Image (cartoon, rainbow, N blue to C red; front, side, top):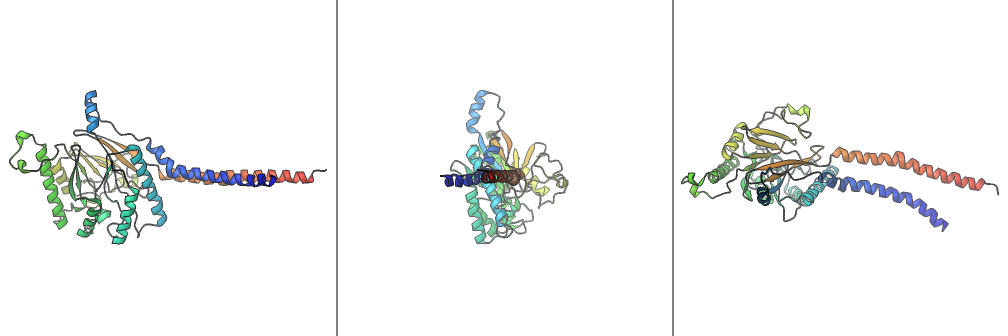
Length: 390
């Protein structure tokens, strides 16, 4: 029994150590996502009357907007980098699905980091990992918009890459998605180069037809022309424009907030057709659709700008730790005539690193000396017993 007691005394510190390490890992890799996400709530629409509130709650669409996951590929993706960043995005997304239960999730492009040059085998592997990370219930619809890293910039884009993306994500380069009468226009902004390429011409033609149908639906019945009578009817709500490239702006100098561009990058002049759409393409989209809201990605930083005095555009930051320390996504409550947006931040990467470093320091500078102190006490007591005169 004495031997068993001594053996147990030796095992207890090891069990305590394992328990401490397990708790730290559990908190940093699971619990912290719930702790942070519980601070996020759906924004409410401003409604004047209680009856209006009851009627609108049923017709309000709950939507998440996220951008630029950049799943790493075989060329630039170190295995540990892929493991760390993809685990972060998977836990964040799955926690959001469980807690917020959105009806639709839109990903605004650059799903993959190396889609523009990945082989068929690498593409299939990337798609498999994406489907695992961003799995969702049948109550949530996931819709993906194409980005430049998925099919390449305009000079890298071709029919093969575009069709490969469209096949996997059931995406069309110019598409109208209507849910609960709310219109979302999905745009392949990579193709809005304006140089007359075959893909560009096809996309612009589809967008023009979509804009015509939407504008006809928004006219009053008495104002319908003979041409509009031949157009397929769509819901009459003003559309929300979703694309990867932001509309034209000179820089991010006017952007504010903790997830805006760093001060050293804010005044960098944007290159049209690379960082943002050209001024001409931006004006076309505004003239064609008269959107009530625009959401875009690409810059990895947050920004809000106003176009034509009353059209807000929200640049959604990257969802990945690889692109920023404080990723986030946008939550939207959207009705036929109104919308409200709020931002939900994910755990900061440096917060998790600090917790791990503090835990390691605690083991080295606190637990180890305590263990040594206990061993010294035991040794002193044992020596005293031996030297004690009989």
